[in-house]
Length: 172
Image (cartoon, rainbow, N blue to C red):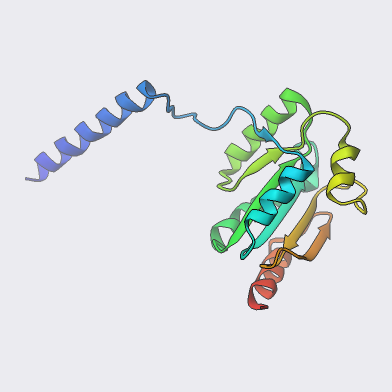
């Protein structure tokens, strides 16, 4: 009986390994690039999560503090499943989006990640938050009513984010 289970499991694994590539799913199925998002589209994404706390993080692969902070966001997203996480990379162009996608895949981020797209970054920044000067990393946390509850400039620790999320989640 035990050998039969092993044979069945082996057959199932072999079948999956053969069929997934045939339907277009590969082991390296991580995105080669990230979708572009405009400031207006990002505001719609935030609004679509009304009723939930939303954390939006702006980052880039060329920003050392952003790269250092990102693993904390991934860990927090796994621990705070009741919070919607969104990341927006400021990496520019097709190669920048590819680098951002590779970084996100390596971090195993399971939340939506976008790029601001090509063009003048100040257009995106001014449309999203006119008070923002473009410094990275930058994180916004919105309460369940969709109102900005907290904003962080510069790299933050896991503990700082965790405490802020817990306070915002506890408030009504």
